[in-house]
Length: 412
Image (cartoon, rainbow, N blue to C red; front, side, top):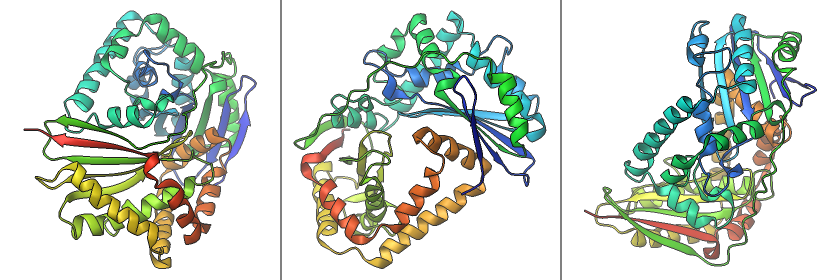
């Protein structure tokens, strides 16, 4: 585990410092504990919309990007169902600029009608280009809405539909800002050529006087148990049919989560995976195939998907997929294959730790889960899992009554 120090300001801001004096740069990563799962029907997409608004102006910063670029920095952000994350990379000597910029927009973002309307147009265009006009772009609109009946995971982060984005009022935006964008709902990680005393001083100087704000009272509705297989057929002008089959799986940190991750790796990760070998290289129905998990804070999905060869229907392809899944259920997992997956995981962990930004993001994310140490504890726990545990969870998870299937049909 890379070294870090953690402290809290009186207003609730959690601050983590990771010193790395081999670098001349610094990373400033601010995670807000809000994503699309904190939204309500009719107001979906607000977390992502607000990510765009944060790059507008604040009381003392007319243009956020311009001020950062003046000191040699760059920035970006992303929104997920569970969090919104903002990050900057800049010369360590200019780290105070990051504190100034980020504290100003946390305290006094300029949410003018002009800014809101400008970003509304940008987000609506993004919705159209990436989700409506892109081949297979609306897959997760259909998949989430089918797999979840009550939980807010049933819509993607962009929002459930254009009407929701069109309908945001200035009051909606202000309420979202005041509820979620304050110190008590944030985790700051500063990494690089910095010192703990330096960051303690800067954090208190720039964030200490910001009020903690009110916490969200939104109740996230738990998803009721699924009792039968669900499926829908969606037709669109796409090159070939596609298949998406998702199974319910435990939440991050819960028993079975890491086993589900290993199941997805064994079955669908890389060119040597079982799905790639059986369905693509040796089969005649799949042009591509893979598996992955959504990795969410609340119970998520273990997903297998693929594009079909020309003329093959998604329903035919599902039969071929099911044959491989049955094979995986009945046959022993070889120690060699399991060790190979673990070695790949270790290599990925090593690669992640090389980049300063990745280290900062992981510290923030696992602090949001409860403890930065979980980053390595999860990895160690996963490396200890043996084949019998995986097999037990395979039988628990790969059940047809827990499946949601999207048959994405090509029409010409």
